[in-house]
Length: 359
Image (cartoon, rainbow, N blue to C red; front, side, top):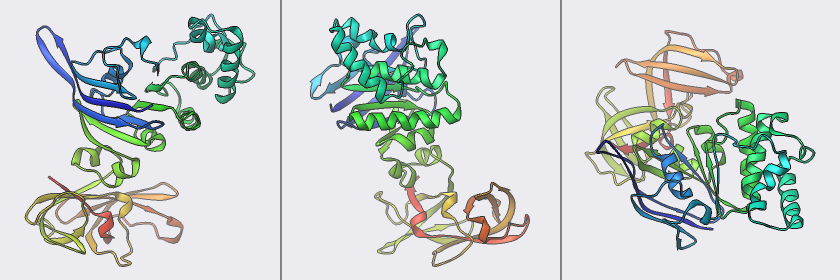
């Protein structure tokens, strides 16, 4: 089922004071897509999710499910399931009873309930645990039960509100892959709320970056990371270096930017409507900077401030003459010597690793 969020706005009122939690939110989600809402605490991602589920009523705007307006429908009339941070399992019911509970409320036949539950139990890897109570299984298994309970209802849309936040790092990694596998297998339209960047990058078809109730950028993981459209998005996802400057020339080889502090000109790319004379930021990821030139157009020189050896890679800080610190992440250290603190070093980055955005 497709889901369209049109000009959604949510204003909370407290003691006569209005607080806008979500504003001008427009998003089209295609059938079978998994879309992640990502942003800092208080950015409006959970409020938006609650409006989709029906637990919050929008102050204005529309929610369309396969073209039908469900904006004012109660939660139980939306055919939408939601997984919360807490597993919310019934402690006095075993795994199978928890999973079958919603189907019994629908007054389905015993045979139909068993067929549906058996299918979901197998899909979520819970076979053999059906008679155990929640306190007799692990946190990851409890999460699977919560997922199975949502899936067995065959909702048109599945919502996740930071569902893995209670799990340890290893379990989180395993469960997010499982959620993605099951979501793709069932081709169910899904919205996933998280503050974990790695989680969002690893499972999403689309990522919606939010800040202060507004959408900052919508794109697939590659676009969000490699082609950020503003400084907030670039800074929020991963590690990054910013170098400011002024555009001096635009030609078929790229965009030339002059940095006054280093008195150097750099070449990069952009998909924004940038003109000569514009003040811009150059966005350079640490892993896009190299110690070998190999045809790379741009260079910086400084002294090695510090480094951390991490086995497969080295994280290195280079202090330029201007005092600015440039972060570098170098890989395949087997073929390279370890850096020497205080030594002068020239580093290089190609124009494809120099993404230019407007200030």
